[in-house]
Image 1 (cartoon, helix red, strand yellow):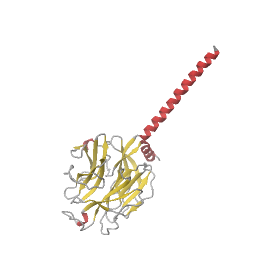
Image 2 (cartoon, one colour):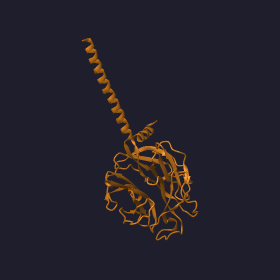
Image 3 (cartoon, one colour):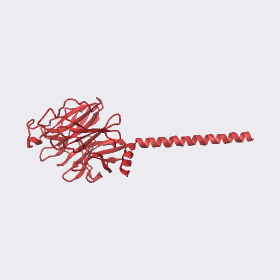
Image 4 (spheres, one colour):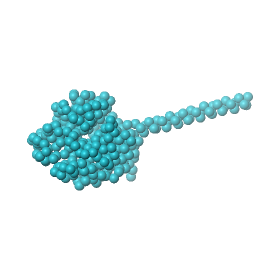
Length: 323
């Protein structure tokens, strides 16, 4: 009888131990899954753009919270500004950042990288228009990772006086889009013209819908328009065609695009009203205004939306809460 009782107690202990181990595995798995959960991040700055990189975050792509503080103070270029911060996540999880360093006089853009959005590499100035000495500016560099060719594409707007028909724009405000590519942000391909739509164009972004299916959201900077349009291509470098009619009102800048479910959300800075606006679309042909559904912190200025995970966000929150 004693032997039977001992065997029974041993069986109970083994059962309890297995249950406990199972709970530990379940808790560990849940913690890992929580840390890997995706979060939307929004790069930002505040006028007069001399403080540096700011960040917002969202779980649904509509309601945004601001992370306190500045995450990278600009030190690249002559202007030492940080406007239009564009961030893209590389396939290895590295965050790559480019930005406008000056209103005029800098013929390149700033670049830095980070693994966690807190600790950043040394900043560098990428002089992409040095071959064009009369270039007025390099505005709003925008990053796009071309997964088909495993390279990064950077596009931006520049004015080269007397290069293109200017229409109603002054010679020092007649922009076209240019590009370069890189695999390592150490060597860059020769700068080339990205798009000349026969009007002044700035603030363009590339969106991949599917293989051989790309959309460019662009700003028609012609006075008095200053509105957004879309164009289409089978390659991220174009050529882009079938430029649409404007789908926003005037005095718009800084578009960025994210996909939430089956919808593409296009965010943009309505700078005249000092608010943020948005459109929702599934085909980039019909658009629904979602401005009233958005919650954006006051003072936020245009950057780009990208994805991170919960672990990255928690590290950022811990950094901002530290004394």
